[in-house]
Length: 118
Length: 326
Image 1 (cartoon, chains in turn cyan, orange):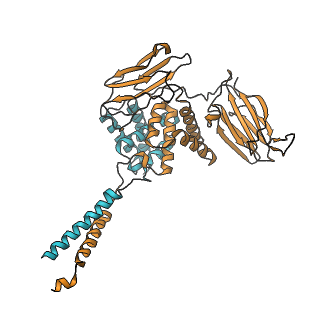
Image 2 (cartoon, each protein chain N blue to C red):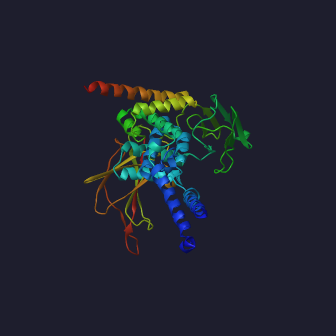
Image 3 (cartoon, one colour):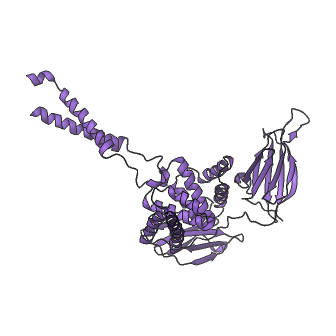
């Protein structure tokens, strides 16, 4: 019986050592990540940057390519999420308007593409 | 008796088994998932794209403070140098002209930014917890009335702007109990040429004075001088772009063409040599044409200059070409 107790304690010590090593001695450092892993507030700012740049460039294809770095969702959906976050946290109206403008363009584009495919 | 013969190996077995279980749990059942990361952790090529996007947004909104706050998220050691290098790298790698121009202009603006008091925003988090209610106001204070600092208070945020007589590196601070969002608050401080300090707070992006690459008339050659400097080990073209008041002009497109090639870059990317300065290394034996802007006066048949001292071996020199936009 004492052996089994010792055995279980040894396992627990092993697990503790593994976790201690992983969490304290050598914790995970995030490097070489991609934009799709960004936290929601950074993602929203990224979308805002795309919207700001779009106001000047008027290049929807370029905006779509930039948004594609944020993941596989449809571009309008990404912008929509950003708008919702911005509204929730009280971003400036001018910023929300710019994102809304980009969303309108993207939504229109996606609608055209859907109707173009039989 | 039998157990005593086996010794304490069972403890080691348990330990190894525990570590194995921990690893299986960590690697298979709950593998690391990268979520909620920050821009600082992005891979270097994504960081390049992020910077290019910051520059493109800056080109659109002209808000240098917002661009700077965004660049700070990337935690580059020297954001000005990083942006300058990326601008030059983009040009050298035949990247997007639009990106290169945006990066170049942002680099120039960053290089120009701190002649007067600068504002540093300590950004704890992008998520705004409390929206500062900025009311648009312009405060103009003459330099003589600024013994120490100006304090502006808006919605719980205290903004302290140092006197223009303070050292250049004295950074005023924004202290706030609320988190600040770059998306929500900007403060732009622009010391005017008359020595007055204009402070403006608004919730809309303001045009920055950094866009000096004005369309204007075509550049014409003002002078062409030989520079013999033994420090130079390669033949060079040195270019200076000036406005009609003889002030250096950053962000001016320089186009150098030679048989079978062309290179485009901007003035002002080496601000330590002047805001309107740019240089280019020539290949010996090749003739170059040069113009500033798409419609500028073309200077043709430029070749590497060889300087011949009265004693000693000849060495490479440089042509200094000054252009003016009348």
